Length: 172
Image (cartoon, rainbow, N blue to C red):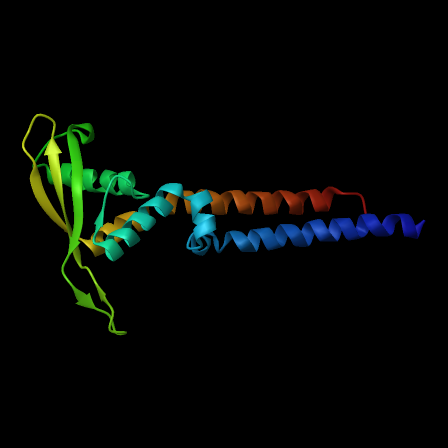
């Protein structure tokens, strides 16, 4: 009779520890989005925009064929509209010709661009050139992962809690 209860007891303990492990993993959900394969699933807009930002830093421009171009355009469009100099609606502004400029040196001796310029054209209007720092764009790109990482963490925590609760209600 004790042999029949032994597998059930191990299953219950396994469920409990698996639930605790998943709950602990949820504490690191924000850091997990730094892994490309995780970011691609959890925060696809963040991942695409990060790829475009990397492309902008290496090639010094991004165009329509580059991954994340439309995501970067959305962030730049929001920037232009927030300045209030062209149009009141995001759909009224077209972003194109995104290039990086400036040079800074890292401690390892590598160079990297410090700013970008782009052209914004309101519907029926003339194009206008804008500049923006790459660090500010990087902050906006990083902000794209926050809501998704929080939801991911809450879902993981919920799954872990559910496993813990189920393990307590199994017959010993």
